[in-house]
Length: 81
Image (tube, rainbow, N blue to C red; front, side, top):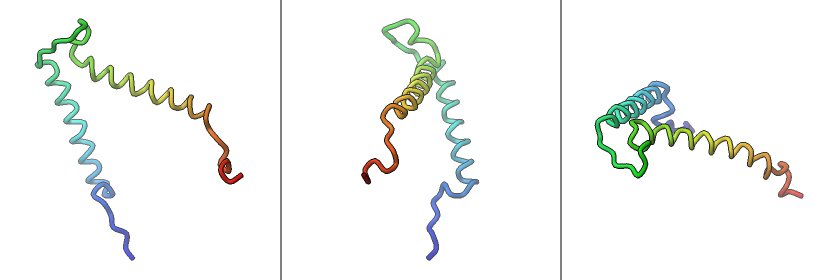
């Protein structure tokens, strides 16, 4: 029986998706310079603030998860005992 392949299994399609994805992110970042913002704080009106804020938050979350994993990790046979 032949395994059914998905659209992303072909390297060409996956590369096309990545190019379109990053082009879309770049376009949104450029548009951000022209859209008026009304923030509660002055730094929220800086172009690219929310992109940088989201990226920094993501990095902090990943680093916190790595530390938390070490604290709550169990042995592989934990449930078999």
